[in-house]
Amino acid sequence: MTAMDIHQILEYLPHRYPFLLVDRVLEVVPGERIVALKNVSVNEPFFPGHYPHHPVMPGVLIIEALAQTAAILSFKTLGDKPDDQSVYYFVGIDGARFKRPVGPGDQLIMEVSIVVNRRGMWKFSAVAKVDGKVAAEAELMCTVRAIEAE
Image (cartoon, rainbow, N blue to C red; front, side):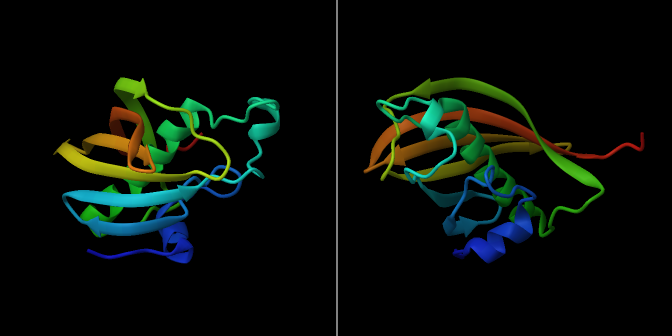
């Protein structure tokens, strides 16, 4: 089990502000699971428009944060890092459920486990929690594909 700080996370994800949604990895067991966190700040760029009178983190961004967490787990499992010749695609979501709103000041704890990896297609079980209570959950499918020349 290894923790990762933001500098290490940046080596495993191509995302950058404002779309980098993983602040720290608390633990990762390659081939099995990962636990990461996102500190949700009132300064997030989506809050002024979602909703100004009662800021709520969009559900699609919670799912995206889980997918980014899954990407880190995939690369750690493969013993590899992303490069400029490929893209890690989010290709499917099953059973997405949103149980509670996530807002400014919350710490989103993301727990992702590998369900299966067949021929480069990864399936994960993913749960996001705040204060130990489920905020969102889903099964995610992801894959790495080479970037084709245009």
